[in-house]
Image 1 (cartoon, rainbow, N blue to C red):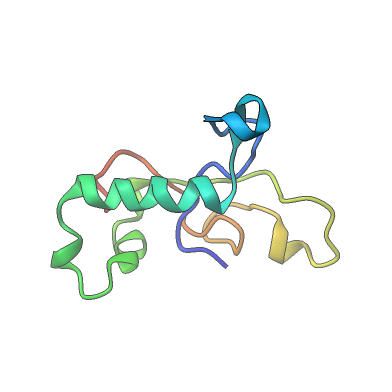
Image 2 (cartoon, rainbow, N blue to C red):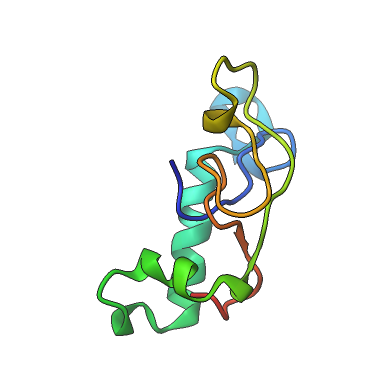
Length: 102
């Protein structure tokens, strides 16, 4: 259940270097998404103007790109793991479209 979405696919995520694992490897999921969204809020410089900053996504929907397709693997309850138009459980209101929604 998300408010916002970010790159969760480890195959399309960020490349990180880890000498214990032999070099560069792609990462995604919460390990990438949480810092990405946190950094976006920090760059927007206005999280302190919101009583509850994640509410900004619901009040300024035009600042987000709606994720309308995709999913997070096999699932028995599609509403929990499939993206659709508008708000949905896996992607929330979508991905930030710049900083205007934050």
